[in-house]
Picture 1: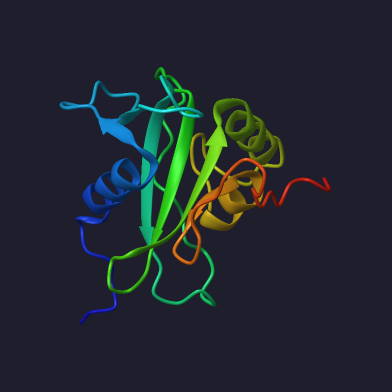
Picture 2: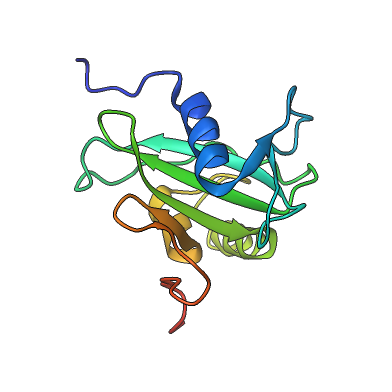
Length: 148
């Protein structure tokens, strides 16, 4: 009604990521990660899960939550939700990719430590699930960094 995201976006994103990508949510979260992969190719990996409800794709400037660089984790999942809080895309980026992107932003004086825009995350990450196709397997992964 208000056009603002609800404060439950993180909980919805955690639930959807766990359900769609076969992850186990860690309760209570130890501080660095939210879930652990149960099956290959994510088995044993520790994930921070970030969620963002996007009501208007044309409107830029959306940011993901602060990334905990000082904590132990292996990768980050970004769950994008529509105006009905239904997931439509999930992106995955490894720790090295994220640290490199954040270091580049800091060198350019463009951001504070651990902060990243949704657009930048999508640029460095790999699409691993979408509403139309479900889980994207390794052979068909759409990787928008391939030509960089």
